[in-house]
Image 1 (cartoon, rainbow, N blue to C red):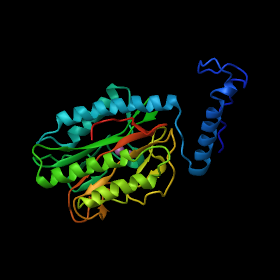
Image 2: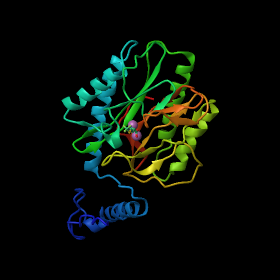
Image 3: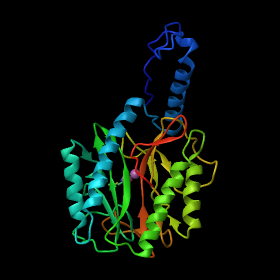
Image 4: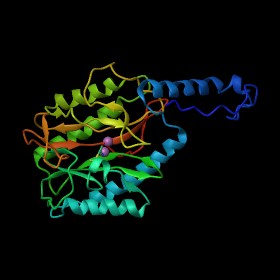
Length: 296
Ligand code: MF3
Ligand code: CO
Ligand code: CO
């Protein structure tokens, strides 16, 4: 389907709406036309929806809710609680804010949040599992607020981390930072994949291949696919208005994984620890803006 982009309402010789006092054709007209052309090119060629300022506002608002939920989760996590208790907290916080937890019933996922403990890479299902001192746990939250999705996750320490837990968590956090720092218009998806892979592997860890970042905002998983490994200069060129997640899963041991019989839980084959951080990133005119910002 070819969606029509709304027709321009300002005439070439009308005063520009930016308030410069110049005629539109002498002011913002070219830039506007370029944006319209780029939007339709990315939609046709890659099925990527470049976001409008209003859509970005909506995703940001959803992101603010997400961060407030992650803050509550962080304060709540301690030895002795169950992952089901995290699910209840996260679910209630969505309801209270008038939001929907996107994971619930997504392709049959049975809970409102993913809780991935120790050797679980991602898509851990909240259960009666009791958290114990020294565990690490990734909590991945995706609210739909006003129709807009934001997607982010953090790995938390339960009590006092082990040396291995601290190491893999810190490397996953910094790997996300390296990926985000590579985001700017004109860079490619391969540039950020390379940055993440290079950093993680230089530090003796491995990067999971089977799960990747993704466009997000209007739907849970949109184009493009964002690989956390790659070759510099390859892949789709980043342009302003792209919104996607970066969410490297970093293993202390080898990268290979298997899925448990529940059809969701992804576990490292060598049972080494795995950690992950995720943010929703907007490509701006000059670089990037995180729509789910937290310190890395
Ligand atoms: N939030 C995950 C992501 O980052 C997706 C979880 S899908 C679910 O893409 F069904 F497991 F919730
Ligand atoms: Co995601
Ligand atoms: Co997520």
